Image (cartoon, rainbow, N blue to C red):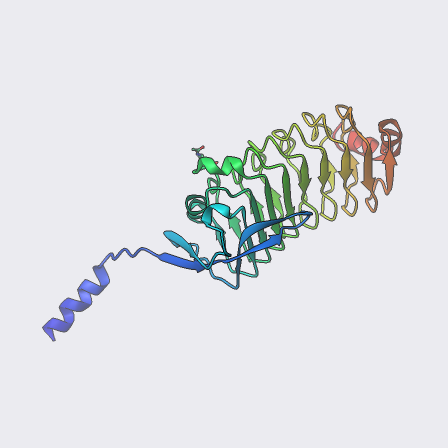
Length: 284
Ligand SMILES: *[C@@H]1O[C@H](CO)[C@@H](O)[C@H](O)[C@H]1NC(C)=O
């Protein structure tokens, strides 16, 4: 009886720490990553569970002949369960594969991108392309992509995204193409795209946006193509086109104050008059 009692107490008060080291099987292969015309040698993970509490991760797998970890140019994570995309995962990728340039996370139930996930390794600065497609990420917090200073092609499509914090994309100064379509975004903070001064194309179609601040693209002077169709837009600030000297084309079908596509800035400004008027009425 006494022994039982003692061990019972120990079990209760024991603050055991355990480390979760996990090994994940890579399928090393040449394959395309979305939108690439060329193939790259990638580590493809599929049907794998990557625990949010893993403390260290090691990748294994059989390389194709003549290839080594240093030949791996990217990750394709598809059909996995990766609830938390964090620095443990990124550090593991970078330390084992020093030449990663591409990351695509497709239908893998990612629910959060932990701020700081990408800024602990200097190698994050070599990443050129990041795609999160068909995940379950409702919120992007400030600093979510901090460290991704060289990413040019950034797609964040069909992730059920509702809230983008103002500094979520801070530091992403090389992005030329940004895709945020097919999410549930209602509001875009005024300064959310400020870091992206090379931005040439933005797609925020198929969201739930109602009002757009007129200064949303201040600082995006290179912007040529804008896609905002299929939102609920009823009002846009009058300065919306003001700094867009390279403007080429806006696609704005199926909104409340506009439903059309326009080429040339002057034509677009005329076509958006109702949106501007509504904005003036809403925010006199
Ligand atoms: C990394 O990003 C996080 C989140 O924004 C931030 O708190 C941290 O200071 C950053 N660290 C470095 C080394 O930049």
